[in-house]
Length: 83
Image (cartoon, rainbow, N blue to C red; front, side, top):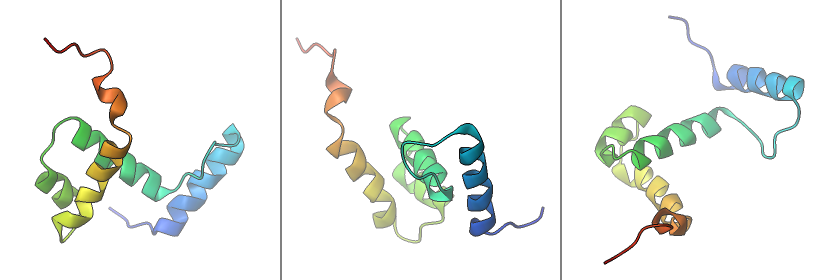
């Protein structure tokens, strides 16, 4: 495998966004990284496992993703009936 630096990948992403049309927000390599992490957490993967995949030395860095979910998490209970 060959390595590619973050800036090169970002250039490719920006070129694709320009070709397709403007995005409602800036898309970078980190957009995909954060989306991947949130997806894993939403699907119940252990935080320690997600931290390892992301290369975090401390699980505290990974817990930031759970804060994002709790701030915007009100909709998770929509349609749930408690008896």
